[in-house]
Amino acid sequence: MRDRAAALIAGTAFAFGALGGAGSAVAQTATPAPTAASGSTTLDNVRKRGELLCGIAGSVPGFSLPDSQGVMRGLDADSCRLVAAAALGDANKVKFVVTTAQNRFTALQSGEIDLLVRSTTWTLSREGNLGLVFAWVNYFDGTGFLVKTSAGIKNAKEMDGATVCVQPGTSTELAIADFYRLNNMKFTPILINDNVEIQGAFLSGRCDAYSTDASALATFRFSQGSKANELILLPDIISKEPLGAMVRKGDDKWFDMVRWSYIAQLTAEENGITSQNIDTFADSKSPDIRRLLGLQGDLGKALGVDNKWAYNIIKQVGNFGEMWDRNITPMGVPRGINNLWNKGGLQYAPPLR
Image 1 (cartoon, rainbow, N blue to C red):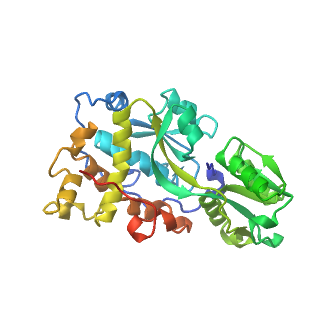
Image 2: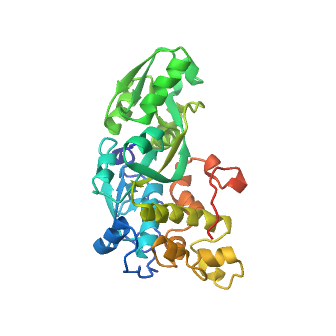
Image 3: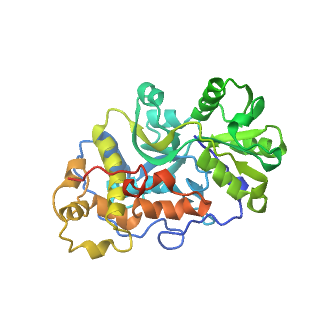
């Protein structure tokens, strides 16, 4: 869970580099999507509508935040775009729907959105109780603590009796309670719904620590500019927080298309295929690469989309590494466990065949 406000970084350079011309999210290289029934009610509705409705936070640097020209930027925003590229042949055909921690699941359940990519943690209770399912993990994260440097705190176990600012109804709130209980420590939660208010409360001294996903804390610290050194992110990561994309249960074809669209990005990175060099692979002899680019086989047909689905993703949005470098690297957050499996990370692509 995370919800950082644009107000905290207004005026700073979080454009992340346009992918196309000014005001355009991606280059226009679309292949028309097939119009025949796909076998997915959601995909058919997306095609009929002509755009993907994607739920995001809309206020999170590095994940979903409008740039100075009003174009939505970030890892989550680009995750929406890659699905649009696969489904419609055009990554620009996305309507971003801002959701909150409280209404994000009902928005997906009710059909207000087709896809939720809002830094949401994959948990059993969410997948088992909500009628929703996680299609992929675009960010492996964990709950952390941010404190004032002047407090002299070096690790979380030194915070017995602390007050902790946290957003209610989130996996973070549960992780903190579990951590303190397991370590026979006590704390007082300061529960605040709005992230701007949470961050203001922490900076004003209303609470001793601010807790949410470690990446969110790192980017919030970064947003403080010259005052960043007044804050310290403790080394403790007290939970596993795999963040990813959710769809409704019951539409397996849509689930497959969404999941394999992400896998295509990882496969491209593994093979050194980028948005800039993809066309140089047109003569590749590798069966894996030829299937990825739609040069042989019918992988797209199996998903109910055009066989150029993966080509459109890579050409218009890039591989996963490009998406990371464009959105997360500027935040000063190392890729770490979000690297490919062959570079020591957890991102592993099943075979496209």
